[in-house]
Length: 371
Image (cartoon, rainbow, N blue to C red; front, side, top):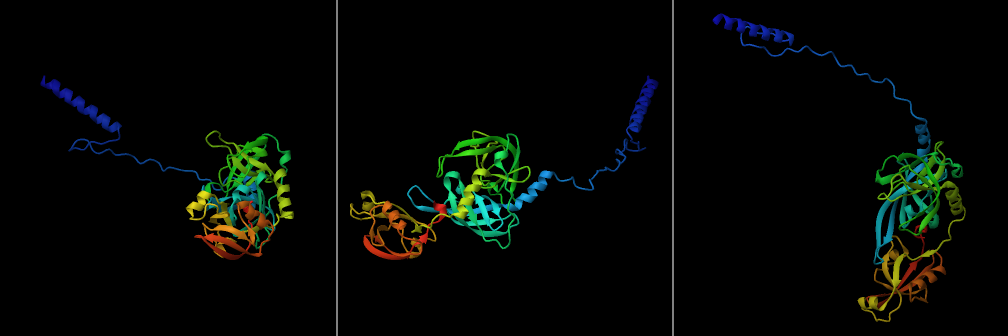
């Protein structure tokens, strides 16, 4: 029996030794199995391309167009629910259509703007002046005074577009800053009519529909064809909650004649006081401590950098005469201003804390951004 146990033990030791050898291990004479000894792996070889991939033809087209697409940054004013004036910042896009500084954009980009800054892709910036708008077509034209001729975009033919043609939207969406954003799609539909939820008009007609992404800030930017020619002015996107990849652009065949008409025949100058007003009613008169039968135009707010602000008219004043003409309603203020020109000096009589006060001021020019 003892001999049998010895033979069994020898067999077990032999099996362990064979297993250790096959696993790449060695047995020490003292201490049993040694630590595993692993042969090093061969060095990993990674191939790195010696030259970049060739650029696409589309990249070359976009490179030519980008200098003609600008970021339009505005400081704008709007009326709150009580008729007071609030100021804020916004931005959109625009397209250079003339090398001397004519830029086309959307009316809703510059609506209410008191200050317009045009920023180019290379970082250059200029003060912009809105020379005219056509709100019903959502078109506005801005002029800048560049230091040297600009790169104007090549105008295409939107009427020749067909369903499925490639188009590219270029603009400055979502306040991302820096270089413009480029999105690609096709002409999804033509001659679309859309309804707008707010703004000066109910809707727009005859638009190009595309699945190229158009986001807030893209408005006023370029929709180009595959050759880099301007075929549309991006204007709107469908409600994100109800649709995806549906955006709209004003065909250049519609936008360009409007822009050229604005440039050739700018809107007539109109005198501007620079106040937000409402009719006086007995309830308002009582709040101001005035007689219930007080008539006039109550000043609800003062536009910044306006004639009213410079002259010292204040919120809460009640305008009762302008240039000697009696004011009993807001319509009277507009009627009187139509009879005067920017730069004229007039006396404005107001009630302030119940006392009559005459203020002399020089009428300004009504900003085109206020319609």
